[in-house]
Length: 377
Ligand SMILES: [Fe+2]
Ligand SMILES: [Fe+2]
Image (cartoon, rainbow, N blue to C red; front, side, top):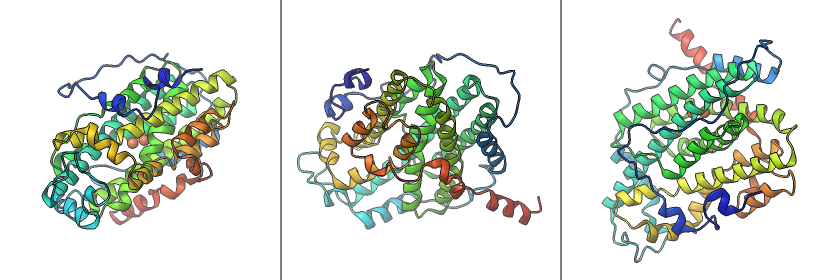
């Protein structure tokens, strides 16, 4: 059993000084090297369908493939300033919600808040792109490390999916927006921990359940908010894949976790908690404030307690909590993870539908087939 200090590197999960003292210092880095600590496993058991739910998912994945270059309307003209202005006209600046006196942005007017919205969009899409590359690397790792042939087959389709996701987010950033951001340090720490871990199920837990569970919720939120037709379709297509990915994690780990000891389950609970806090910290957008010339140590504590931010942060956990429950992680042992999720205020989602049950609701295979028929393919 580990202490919060051992899990997070700080005794208090909400210690702003500690959270904000971390920053990406390698902003000019082009390559980032991480040691993959896991064994590569061959299986000589080629009996396809031994795990029927994974086999079904593999067949769905084959039908759900789309082409990032030709299936999205890249000819849509995107005007980031117009989008940012529309958002400002709808919600105003943060001075509408928070007392900003003494933070350095108390005198911002329309122009600064619109610039802030433009930067926030660049930042959000950049972090999605980096997270997608994390998923690409992790899924390739799962192909190597998982001992079941049905899982290797399925994971190989996910490698293709994630390559497409990196590709479309990078293209959107390069051709439609106004700049990139380097990877957020909290996201990078989590991705490094997932890749370094030697236990193959930890890749699933960190990536499929936590990172992708949160991404699915975040994409849904952005999809609802955005009025921009290209981004809306891009997100809907990406979400159709992500729902399968999270379901893959749930279906695989459910089997594995049945046979773990109490001590092993506790390690998984602690890793899930670490991932939850790292992702929450990554959403503080500290790099946007820095780029706008605002002292993050002044502004972030003000924003922290804002009801809108809390609501958004909670919404991000709508997939993670029911999926952890389905895996038995919430209540195993002394219900350690339930108590942590209570502390960070997200336990209310425990009875929402888990992703293995809703994967078809996100599917676009009928739409792809209709488009192919119309094109005479
Ligand atoms: Fe993805
Ligand atoms: Fe994914």
